[in-house]
Amino acid sequence: MTALAYNSLHHASPQAADQIFLIVQHWIVSHAPAGLQSLLAILLSVVAIVGGFGLLFAITTILERKGLGRIQNRYGPNRVGFFGSLQPIADAIKSLTKEDIVPQTADKLVHLLAPILLVLAAFSVYAVLPVGRNMVLVNLDAGVLFFFAIGSVTEVAVFMAGWSSRNKYSLLGAMRAIAQMISYEVPLILSSLTVIMATGSLSTVTIVEKQAGFSRILPHWFLFTPWGFAGFVLFMIAATAESNRSPFDLPEGESEIIAGYYIEYSGFKFALFFLGEYLGMFAISGLAITLFLGGWNAPLPFLTWVPSYLWFFAKLLTLIVAFIWVRGTLPRLRMDQLMNFAWKFMLPMALLNLITAAVWHFMPSGPVRWLVSIVLVVVPYTLLGRNQMHKSHLEKRVYRFAE
Image: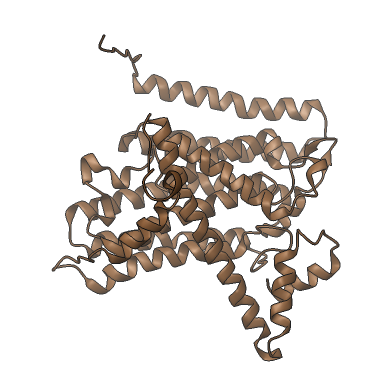
């Protein structure tokens, strides 16, 4: 990584397998002229990020299509390669060779820049995510703030795509997406604040370091606290909405607005939107791992010999499988249900969880602290949930099958 990573590498004594990528990078950079070493180190790190998460994108597409196929009792891709394993390559070739159609009345420059900006913003946030021990591109003191600031550029890119297409469906899809993203960004950031309060730092590296260690066999992850568990659940629900994943995929509701803000995109430009959406999902999942799941730390004390980056990507793949499972299970919400859930349930719960984290911090350790914190989480959840269910006037569904 950077010179900062090299310095920390010399002061640490990890296993060689854990630091193999840093050792190789350091060896390559040491053979370059002194004036170019910093630039080469940055370029190698950027190539590793783009290549690694680009490969993960290809793996996830085939994993999702095969997984949804099994959930829906069908095969999924099975023609290209062994059991459809080469399907991502076929999809890439199709996207590169497919005709690029631009509406005659569209703003062609903005139409072109929108997907590029979306992908650049998605890749930029990886700079502050520690994917392993000493493996972070930039250790900013305000890493979490940088993540959310750069991530908000996605909303600008979505609006550019909807507005430049000169299509009422694309503009409506863009407005839906922006309303959804802004609404769910509030509980997303508030749920992150609990971790910032607990650690006293905005640095992603420091947050991971605060979760190192074990109490017997239980890791010191923030997930294993009442406020951390509630914050993680709130964070992942908001992250699902931010990523436009089911059941929050209203910006591309085919039955209402055909395909939303990218309806007028085809070929490689459409593939960039597709790539940006998955990269955003990986990034927000990586932040959840950093904040609540101990980052690259091992889950059990006798597994610390496993390279740290493998733990990070194992956790990331677990969250990806959860996203796929939810997509194959839950139906899409209505727009009013989406907004009500954000402002009338998620926001109050996130604010109350901040109070819970403060109480946890100032109370002495012991069973009383656990009991008070659990009550502060469970009681508001029950009351808010019952209130929402009562106002919804939901009736029990009855399923009838043909005999």
